Amino acid sequence: MAKYRQHGYQDRDHESRKGSGERTGPAPPRRDNTFGPRPVNLPGTHAVSRCTQCGTVLQGMPSTGQCPKCGFELHSCKQCTYFDPGSRFECMQPVQVRIPKKDARNECPLYEIRVTREKETSTPATLRPNDARAAFENLFKK
Image (cartoon, rainbow, N blue to C red; front, side, top):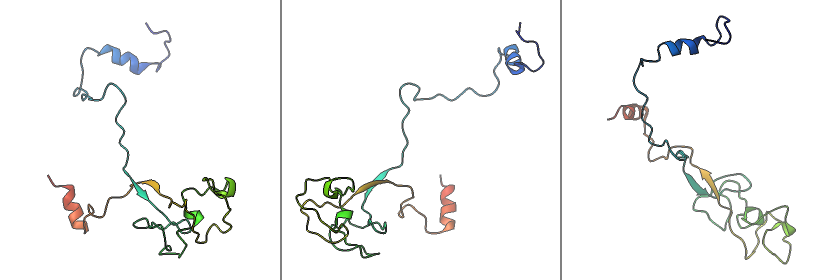
């Protein structure tokens, strides 16, 4: 017997108890990963080196020369892995002498080009179809 007899209070729950002996519809699908953590489906990542000035991806990760788009010097403090404006001499490595111009070319022996890990968010060009008809036909391939 229901505690509250107002019309509409737990009507669905009451109706489902009446016909609970019979099931309607197909059985729920069997899940393989019922125990433990579920597998994570994350996009892949790749190592990328970008120009600090304009953000252009540097192909082949060159450590010397200039950016092909804006001409920014690549062997400079701002392009280095260890560049940190909050550290002493703006470098995370123990340097003896401060380098005054952070965007000019220098001969620092501790220099390493900054490499970041970025998510692969687009389809590689090798997997992309060349035209719309090929993309449409790929949808219905068996």
